[in-house]
Length: 202
Ligand code: ADP
Image (cartoon, rainbow, N blue to C red; front, side, top):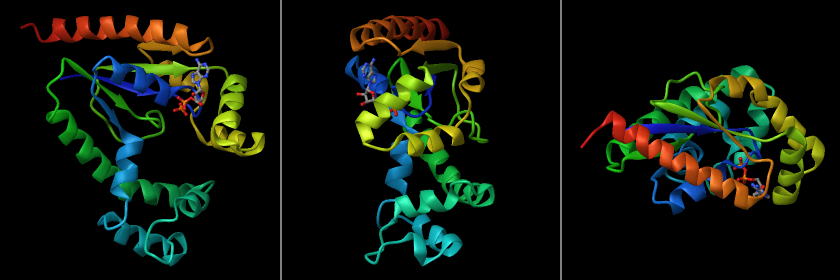
C-alpha cells in the first residue's frame, strides 16, 4: 500500500482537501477522527485518562470533557506527553489495521500533528497543505467563531510553517479559491496513482 501522509496547521484546509480526495475514491484514514472514536464513551483508554488526569476532565455522565482536557494539556508539556503516551499506541495500532484492510492503489493518511508527533507513522510521501497564517486565521474565525487570540494560541502550539514545509514532498498551496484547490488535488491524485503503480506494477 502506497501511503500519502497529509498534514497542515489548523485552518490550512486539511478537512477540505481530504474530502476532495475521498470524492475521487481515495480511502482517507484520519488520525484525529480515530482519536475521537477511541475516546468515545465506553472505550478502554478512558479509564487510563481518568487515572492520569482525574475526574476533572470528565462529565458527570462519564464522557470525556474534551475542552477541559485540551485546556489542561495546553501549555503543560508533561501533561501533553502523558496524554500522547496514552493515546498514540492505540491510534497507531488502529491506523495500521485500517491501512492493512485497504485495497486501493494508494491511501491518504491525515495526521495533523505529523511534525510534532514523535511516533513513526508509515508513509511513502508527505503532502503539506500550506496557507499563510492570516488566511488561516480568517477562515478559522469564520468556521469556528473563535476569537483571534484563541486561534493564535492554537497556532502557537503547532509546528511552525517552515518546519512543516521541510517535511514536504508535495506542497498544496491553499491560498486561492476552491476551484484552484480542486484542480491541484486532481493533479496530485494522478501523480499518486502513478507513483503507487510504479511501486506495485500489476
Ligand atoms: P483544517 O481541516 O486544516 O482545519 P478546513 O479544511 O476545515 O481546515 O478549512 C478551514 C475553513 O476554510 C473551512 O471552513 C473551509 O471550508 C474553508 N476553506 C478551506 N479551503 C478554502 C478555500 N480554498 N477557499 C475558501 N475557503 C476555504
